[in-house]
Length: 329
Picture 1 (cartoon, rainbow, N blue to C red):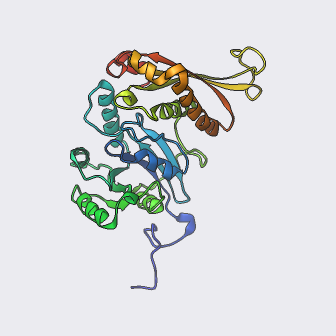
Picture 2: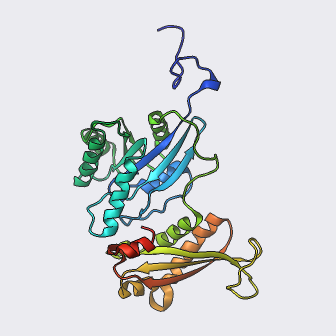
């Protein structure tokens, strides 16, 4: 080997700091429902930008989280879980994932270590292989999530099975909850990104609007403790965020920063029986939802808010194109 040592990332070996390579691009996290995509997004960003829940199909939009480092900027797209759709909403969520995959530079295919590879994983792998056939598709990194839940022998076997699923550019085992291998994953993803300038300001962590983040936090609180089909039937719309006179009319707006901040939002369900479940006896469950969501919204906005929640029925909205449009899908 010669005395000249090549600097990593510096193709011509000059090593000049002023000419160091900067990489930037979009990275989609995909996988079956409930494989840890949202938890991983939050771990990589370092702040909560995507809601999490043990309920499948929590994510309904391609939520972008932004990780800015000295040598790179990674724009994460946390997609809905790919599944066999039973409603028009499910079809639209799957379409959103496929559309997203066609626009990103890297795909992070999440495969949980505590679950065997199944038909859903093979379905996604087949889609990715097809995308890379005959044209330049995205680079694909297998991200083996939840390694804190299994022993070494199980993990080793799982990694071998993942390796046989398709021709991955890299395979990285991680635990988002424990923070294990997160820095390694960011380095691996950065290597797969194209060279390019920074796309967002240093302090921007997400593309989500304030109202979108508030509605998601309310939906996250509403998902806690519900069962069966109800999680899929809940949608939230923020009607307004307004400052009102704390000593006067609760509906009279005042100058920003001078009054009480009020968030008014509506939770939509599909049937009257579901409305009763959300509200609870004497409004007890809706109060719990409001209390849980309010603490998260206070943290998001950096001030205390008054949360005014209403529950309405939008019959079979998951199957109704017009109602899906009104609810933002």
